[in-house]
Length: 308
Image (tube, rainbow, N blue to C red):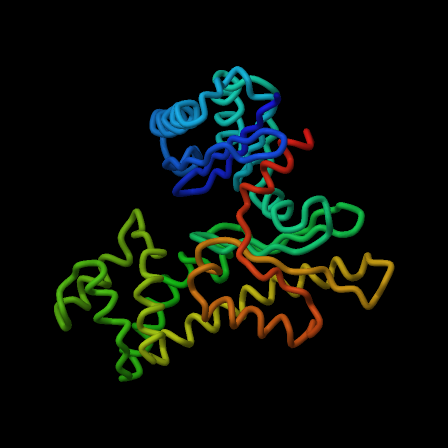
């Protein structure tokens, strides 16, 4: 019986799924194996630990794997792609299929079919596939250039909104919430500390602030709510761009590709998702939206089983 290995390699973690032709046998998670996010020794150790755990849980040796499909952002970057191919080839039998995270997300939501997927976690991206199988994307240019609606962008924009409120003489619960989360002093001493901390090099992990921003919004803070709504709208703008491109190539001008979501922000930060949906539906009121946040590793397994 053939066995298939699917891997979803993210910036902070990697998920692994071992399956046969009909069943999922085991899932495990490790720290990141993406070389843009960690050193080679740490990535290798994380990979080896996960593969060992899969073998222990299933009794399936790595030499019995027929094919592996791994999806990751930055799959065209030699540092990322070469490391994954070399380390997996040395450990796992069968060919290695290396795809972008957007491709496995599309196949998780719409296996081999047209559609649009929005990814929003630490970073963000929007990808679509038309009826001819052609891919089109918007965003995904990294935190300095894009990442609308992402955890990084929410945290960064919340800080900017907090200091604008200070300049305008408005109060916001974001300030004490951020100071508390980053374990800084209370105002006024904490303000100078926050300026120094937020501007340090290397930069802090802005995405960690998302939980504080969401909590403030849920408690009715208008500044926090505005940040989340705006990020949803900015991400929706990218979705509309991709939808328009795909519709231009469709034989039926009334058809609109369906939409799906993945990533921790779209799963857990409801105001961002709601703002995104409302904004998209203003232009595409009949769009079909996948009812659940999809699991990209299912798309990697689909590709591993298909063999391409």
